[in-house]
Image (tube, rainbow, N blue to C red; front, side, top):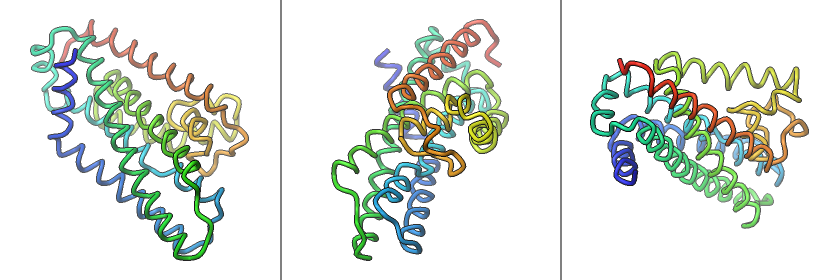
Length: 245
């Protein structure tokens, strides 16, 4: 298992898609934070919400989905399984690798926007977040990054087609879940890409989601783990029994 994990991490580090999406996550998050803190007045609560709701988490989900579906798109899944015949162990290695990648991307994104926001807000003479508040935002962001990285692998392995998977994730995260939270908040807050992650962050990722509808952080984490486990189990069952091509 260790060798499989090392191989997946090496594959990640040497893939241009990973570098491009990671750079995109940092650039988009920095742009949002710099424009918001430069052009408007922010208090401590709004600053915390801004840092916690950066688009970095969405990039992590897309990164893992693109990574696993790329195995079918580029016809490399057969060679991967020939090198590691135990399909369950291979899927587990990919899930762990992309969870770690989610942590790494979230760390870089969150640290970058924290530094930028603190410098800009301090220069304007406004109140900044203390170390305890920054640390709280950081660990929550890392947890969401790990869970979304793992979730993307399960969903991608279920759907296999890259375009279908990315389109489905965009529709789910940008349209269906926010709409469901607005119309039926008791159900929508359990969603895998917006509802539960917002609960972990204790800040609504989508501006249309009201903070009062969110799950408690502990329950939200349990729900997210449940989504990851369900998609992993379903993907593992399908991967064992279906053709590779």
